[in-house]
Amino acid sequence: MKTVKVDGERLWASLMEMGRIGETPGGGCRRLALTDEDKAARDLFCRWARDAGCTITVDGIGNIFARRDGTDPDAAPVMIGSHLDTVPTGGKFDGVYGVLAGLEVVRRLNDLDIATSAPIEIVVWTNEEGARFSPMTLGSSVFTGDIALDFALSRTDPEGVTIAEALERIDYAGNEPIGGRPVGTYFEVHVEQGPLLKEGGERIGAVTGSFMARYFVATVTGEAAHVGPTLMEQRHDALVGAAALTLEIDRIGRSRGREGRSNAPHIELFPNVRGVIPSEVRLSCDLRNSDPAELAKMEQDLQAAIARIEGERGVSIALEPYFEFGPIRFDAAMSGLISETAREIGLSCRDILTVAGHDAVPMTTCCPTALFFIPSDTGISHNETEYSTPEQCVDGADVLLNAVLRIASV
Ligand code: GLV
Ligand code: MN
Ligand code: MN
Ligand code: MN
Image 1: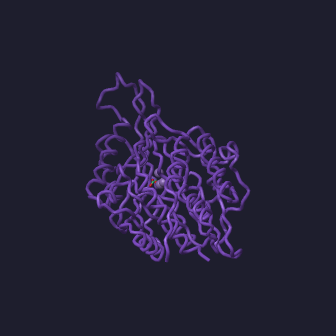
Image 2: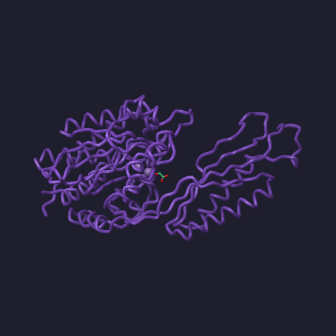
Image 3: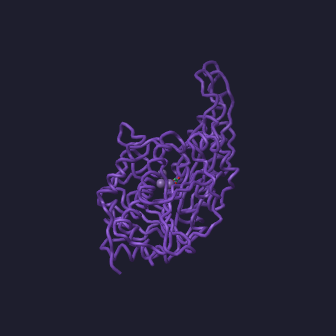
């Protein structure tokens, strides 16, 4: 089949223009879900998509669908999606690249006057990051029915603002019914967010599956007391318990080589006042492994560490699971399509697992799904220095354009 190429300069210019919304002094982006910055990014996307001839609809959780009609009115859409929200110190590529690569596909089809039989819908999913509202991949999980709409709308940010209120405020509480309609296929191209493609020199990673991830909240309970007169042997310091636990969590991941990951990335401390020994800490804990049996062993290690720390530090620790994803396998025909398309256009490609969560993970329950990566040139993400080169961005968009054409063509 003949291959086509995207307009790389237009793609890069759009990425850089979008990256100015919420730009940070360190060259990254701060565009938390449903804030003024997220609204500005959504508005810009909608304007660009309308200019490209798309019809915009928004559903009740704020997911945006930009549709380019196909010639077959009965065909289920080919969706291309990702997210525009970022973590507080994020970069200019995570999520936004996948959305703008989708837009570039539509723009290029327009340039070349190519009609597809299936409609193409570019999707912006709400709150992928889970940074302002938890959990992550919220919009896509509501779309697939994995998370109930009422539960999602009632999630609050640290100030107590609900998603329902935040959506109303930025005027993205849409009235399109949520999900429940056929989707032909879903494509998501993303930056790798790790070093493997860069290390191996491959230009595309076809994602065949995901690590399994489990998130917990550990509540460490001690006793509030005066920081001065209380004797050292009298203390039940919840923060000291949480510090010991954090080190253990780190050790548990490190002891698994490249197959394990672990972190305690979020902490709430009470009463968090100078003069009072901390009485309670809520520590989030994130364990990941490519092998679910190994993940179960990591959890056992965590339980053993908790029992030890309780004895050593005179605190009690309750561990509650609150979110998990994976392990999943992506549709083999879809990952095969990505590898074949990459090779056809002369790009080296390897199979890879995703360690990070993506909207493509819940979408696997809805339709055949392809997730694929371009290299993270700095090998790092969720960091202001996150970077992929213009050429790397073009590679992924070229694969996306040609793979979508193979699925959606007349
Ligand atoms: C987000 O991408 C996560 O994997 O936690
Ligand atoms: Mn992302
Ligand atoms: Mn992210
Ligand atoms: Mn993610």
